[in-house]
Image 1: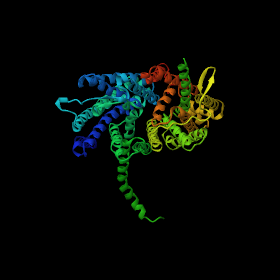
Image 2: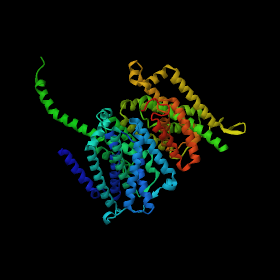
Image 3: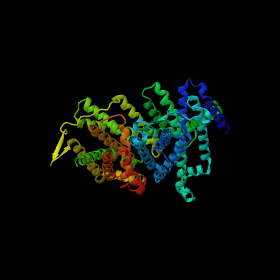
Image 4: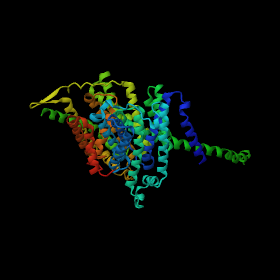
Length: 331
Length: 287
């Protein structure tokens, strides 16, 4: 427990001081991006890790929120109204998404969510009168809550950090709640949960809605971060990204998606400056993770550390036990 | 009137290509319960390898196509033997590894064949059209339709009339029981995976003269394969055949009639089928 607290404190200090020690504005922006994707990945992890439901269509929900902000702002509405419209639309979208995809689980769920994500991408790509097609929609300026402009990267970073902290806290509360516990129950033993009187479908539906909420929050932050949205944000690759973050970091943990988001975004934004074939590097990293740490980086490292500690604790004992024998001549 | 007929021919042609792509996908999914998200990459890889053989090495089209199919089959076999084999039942790891491989393949193709689209010449002898009564049919498209039909028939014979096919069907229906009666299901997995990969690669080079070969082809085709399989039902040959042609028609007519909502119209029948019949039109049970 104390180790967790020390870790949390260290993490908070590192995150709070980011603008002080990273080498420039660009890297501050990369950190904002990591946090945004961490929120997105947390939302996806609620389904993957705790519900056992792998969704490959979440970029669609992310995109609904982003497009809603961009479209309503372009229509001349204020920031608060735009954010509210985006949240409502994304949640309605999530409800439909869940109603369709929760008819099945397992691989069927993967395929249906993928197809729904493609459907939303198709709308964004082709419904030009609303989405402006491939040209996308730009957002002129970021909001200025309490009179503080979010245009400087550092200000935007701290705003993102606040939302990120709240999202992690919300996810932590959700996972620890009775609803979260019953979600884990539906993941492991859906039939027993049903027999115990839980409404398995409803539990999963609630998890989808919470996941959609986190995704929408990430989508809203994203549109203010890039100030531009195009169908590129809704592609299959974009949907696969948070899933890859979650599984590579370790599904079913709160830290895993954050680590995964950092890994992917760092390779994408920083390693790509040095390596042309960074996509191949990313793919190779994923394959390596599957081979060496199939449970993901966070649980995998935990297991390694535990094994190392155990080996170290055992080593003196083994040496002590071996000593009297080794001195003895064999009869 | 002529436009409608042309659209119909294009739809059937595209359906034939989709069938080559989705038959293997459906078998792999039905037998091995693996969501093979590299299937689009296999289609693209086959197209690129074939295009190189035909356009750069000036091999005859059909030899190039055979080499492409074989290359992709070997590639698929390696993935199955070296990676997917260890991950039986671990669905999240399968998603991670298949997506990781598709990233690698996409980047590899970009590195080797650059980002410029490659157009492949129609094989000589199939250029031009056939005149029937007073209508004009492009020969190559008719050839694709015929080839898809022949491959469909061969697959049907393989699955329905041979010992191997009987073992594969047993593996699809009940893998544990198949093991108990002495069928080496793990070898079947490799065979089916290679077969599916070869079909996808062959479909890629067959489609190349029509679709051309470009980066992103993999992500264009994978969702279509998924929709076909969801529509037709997993593990069912008839399902992927019917699904392919339905999607072929909807894709082409949708593009022509409702260009703004083309993709929406494409994915709509899938949603309807899911609501009314979650296991797909010809599927046996909900996955």
